[in-house]
Length: 396
Image 1 (cartoon, rainbow, N blue to C red):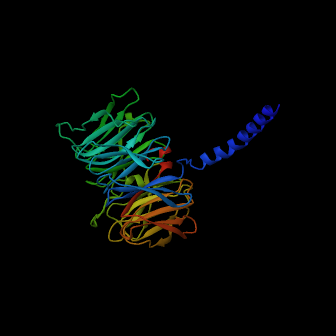
Image 2: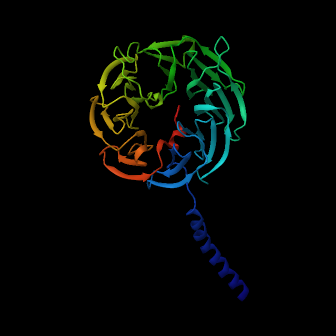
Image 3: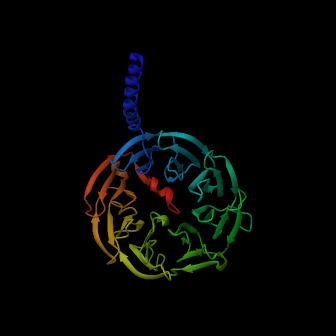
């Protein structure tokens, strides 16, 4: 009887202890939804940050040339894929905070995309030109798309995005073409070429619904648009004549078209060589208004609730941010974060915006409604800021 009672007491002790033990283990767990990566462009390193407490969790080095780096995420947000300018493709475990795989896949690359199902990574290359596609888990080569014109010459690839139905879309700078690589049938893509879209497409975007692919043209005024639901209609020219105008200004830095803002019925676009933001009616892609701004816009980004559009600028006016009210189409505020404001990123629901201030070696965090500065982090030469919520957005 005494042994039975003793065993019973021990059992109760163990049962009571289990929840405490499990609670202790759970303290070490972390989800990925509030994490992100900040690029430290001058040192080949990144910081992993979290947005809830606005803190830096880790610094990871050894990622090569990050002077024009971009980041994509696996669909579970566990892995970040960093595309470096030196052709490096690096897989980083966001939870273990370390590099888990790294390859050099070309001599010079300009960004990448991840497929709709999260299985494939595509990289846009300047040297030797073309697109390479890799297994997102192992980084093993799946497909090599040389991107040659009719004369057999390779082109630099720009404006690479993911599109619905397991497709990648990209532009050929020298050839003046837009290609669609369809992987829906397997690992050997079906390629559709759209020729003569305009001179020197320099970057592109895909609308948030995945329908329209729009390439900006550096060699002439206007843009090239492909309706991905009706690709048989070919490429349509839009915004003819907007360009750099009759009196072009020096272009110190090309706008990033992935940073175009889509808000309500409008698209807000940076005007190449102008101190203005173009407001375009998304129903017929006609210009509605030009908003004069502080300098030549680089990123033009809408808040998640689409109440405001934030704009940063090229050198020498890159110490400033301006905020456009979407309802009035007027500038409602100007901020001076510091020298070389390179990038912005809203938290997933838009309550805060993170801003990289490269030459101050800082990232600033603002309330996106009151515009109050909430804090800052020390970061070496910060540029791109990429939060894990991008894993669930087309084209980002």
